[in-house]
Image (cartoon, rainbow over all chains, first blue to last red; front, side, top):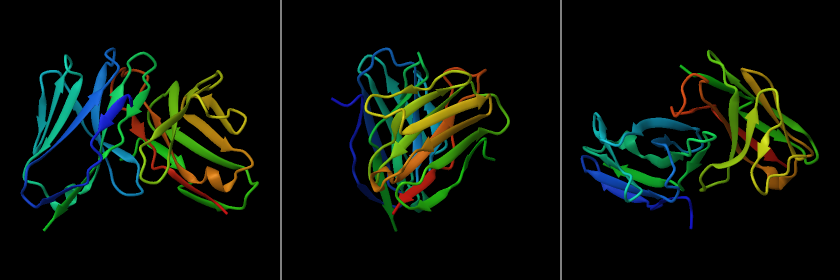
Length: 110
Length: 117
C-alpha cells in the first residue's frame, strides 16, 4: 500500500465547475499536510497548507480528517488556468521528509 | 520570488559523463535539503536527505556512490550523478526548509531536466 494515495484522474471538468480531490495517508504520526500544484515539466509549487480546522484560500478549500487519515481539496469556479497536477503531500514531522501522493491530474475545458 | 535556486535547469550529455547539480537557498539557512527524482507521469520520489556538515542519508534503492551529495554550507547542496547512463535521465528537484520554521512547507528549486544520450 502506498503511503499517500490519490486518484490519478484525469478529472475533465468545464470552466466554472466545482471539483474535489481526495487523498489518504497511512502514517498516523504525520504532522503536517499540504497541497502542491505541479504544471507539466515544472517543479511543484505550494498551493496551500492543510489545517485540522479546515482552511480556505479564495476558491480553494482544504480539509483534514486525522481520524480517517484523509485530506481533501475543493476547487470552486474552476478556471482554465487551474489545469495541472495536484499533489497531496505529507510531512512526517520527524525528519521533515515529505511523502508525495501520485498526483491527481485536472483538466479544465472551455 | 524564488527562494531556492537550482542550476542547471537542463542538461544533455553523453553516457559516462558526470553531472553536478547545485541547489541554493537564497535568503535563508537550510541545514537540511532534500533531493527528489521524478520520472515521466510519476510523482516525486525522495532520493536522499542532504545534511550540512555530515553524510547524506539515502533512501532504499538509491546508490550513494552513484549519486554523490555534498552539503558544504548552510545554503548550498550539490548532487553529482556520476558516470550517468540513459536510465538516469529524469527530472531532479531539490527542496529546502528554513531552519527556523519546522513543519512549514518546503521550497522547491526549479528542477533540472537531465537527458543522457
